[in-house]
Structures are given as C-alpha cells and as structure tokens.
Image 1 (cartoon, rainbow, N blue to C red):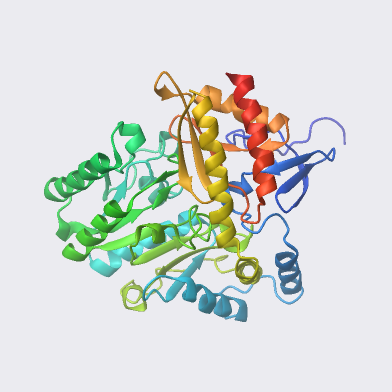
Image 2: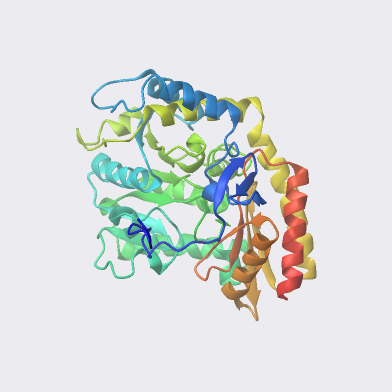
Length: 420
C-alpha cells in the first residue's frame, strides 16, 4: 500500500512541541534521531519518579505476567488492597476510604458527586482560575481558561465561582487579595448560594493550569472555618500539585489545613493511568450505592506501579529532594527576574514553579511561546499555562538533580536573551 495512511490523530489535538520521542530515562527524553532533551514537563507532572524508573518498570513487568485487567467491582486483587493501605497512611486526618478511577477529571467529578450525596445539597463552590478536568462535570468547575467550555454551553448547573487570592494579577499585596477574596466568598454565600444549598468547596491549593498560583494559609484556613461553620465539605484537588511535588506530600499541607476530600492523579503511578478520590468512611458511606465504579479504574498494573512509586518516593527521599531542588530552582529564576523586565513574577513551591512573562504590565503569551520553542531547540522541554499562556511552567521529575536544574536554567537564560 502506498500513499498517505488513512488513520491519523485528531486535528483538535494541539502539540506543544515538535519532538518525536523514542525513549525516556530519568529526567531525559530521546528522539528518533537520538537527540537528548531535558524533560521539565514530566508529562504534565506525571512521571514523578522520572521516565522508566527501574523499580517501577520491574513492578509493572512482573504484574503484567500475572494479571493485566482485574475489574475491581467484579473481582478483588492484592495490589489495589495494598495500595489503599499505603495511600491511606499518606492521607490527612481521618481520610481512609479511597475510590479509584483512571483520570483526574473522573476523580474530581466523583468528589463533586460525593459532596452532593453526603450533604444533600446541590451547589459546589470553586475558585476562579482553577482547573478540574475536561469532562462535563469537571469542565463546569473549571475556569482556568475558556478552551474547556467554549462551544459547550450550557454546562452543568450548580457551580458557583468565587475569587482566588492571585495577588500578582490583582496588583495587590497578599493580605489585600486575601481580605477581598474571603469577603467576596461571604457575599456569595449571602447572595448566590445559601449555605444550606452549598454542599462544599473544591479548590486547587496551588493552581495548575491557571498559572501556578499558590493560595495562602489565611485563605485556606478561612475556607475551612466557613465549611465547618455551615456543614459544608472542603475538597482539595491535588492532581497536579500533590504527591510530593511541592516539597510536602500534599500541597495543602503548606497551609496547615485539613480537607475532607482529597483528589489525586498524575504522579500517583509514574505514568500509568490512575486517579483517586479519598474521604473518611463516614463521609464516603453517605454516597449512593453504585455511584462509584468504572471499567478501568484501579487497574491492577497501574496499582502495582503506584506501589513501586511510593517505594521510590520514600526510599530516595523525593519529597525532600523536591523541596531542596525547588528552592534552588526558584532562587536561580528570581536572579533572572532581577535582570529581565519581561519576567513579571516567579511563583510556586517545590518543583512546581511558574515564570509569568509580561510586556508593559500585560501577559505576553507570544514571547512565552518563543522562549519555550528556543528551549526546545536547545534540548530543554517546558510547557506553558495561564489564561494567556504566558506562564512558563517548571515541572521536573522529582528525581531531578541540582546539576540538571542548573542545566535547564542556563538554557532558559539564553532563551530570555534570544527573545528579548
């Protein structure tokens, strides 16, 4: 057969890079020509233990030889039971019951469903700039950009959007932004969604797609206080920021607050599709029977990889490494910000750092794209985020070394010069 092949990827998929990857190892990807790239995208924060960590590979290979698919509402398997026990030890407070799915959007929707079932109330409060997924329920809770809901209206009702304390965007101090956001949240509960109609709040403690924006302690504790006062549930979407990435196992720990529900995915299984929604049993039991399930959720190979991922995180001290290398990364990027007026802000925690590119006080997504493309040409892969795609985001694998951080920042520095 000659000529163009019939099957191809959908044209609606937009490629961030032009790299055709042959293999990966640690913090590096290698294309079909053998060129090496320092991968500071980590598959959008997924390959937490690096590409093809030997321990994760071995666990998956061993499991594939035993059982590939054991649908977990039909039969039970040991890896999912062992993972639940291990993951339960990592959960905050009295969270001990876990539902598994395949993608973060499914876990976020299950959190929303659980909030409604457990309280008998219809409405969910989310926060401006948050990203919770692309499926209908999760997209309805997403306000990081219009791409996820454009042409999809009307979307699901019962979602109320409250402001998030993005001090840089407002041009205020953190204190001013927090005062405003808590005051507006109270006003929303007075004028849009009465507490008796509000099931809970779902928040990214550190926003991902919205621009790598951390919340702060007073704001997060303010949410906890209002949820406790009104019998609402507080959910932490830890899909991108959780699992050790920010230098604590969960990003909400930075703010000394305990949620009622935790949503996790991405780094959970080092690249195998797996997500989870966790809550205390007394809350989980209030959901409707049969409301949780799915064909591929809790896949046995993914669970085996997730167990190995936890082993690697603990044995190699990856949470601590994320904190140490992230501090070094941020220090170096702040030094560049002092030299380049186009860097409006450097923010984030651990190995989740965003560089906000600005021009005349406005988001400069065009330059951010040029910076990323220049880096790609010179062997460094970075992605962008933010409503104007102006934030260059740094998401190295948690195994990254100080030397690799320096290599990446040196390439980035040259890209800043080349695009100035």
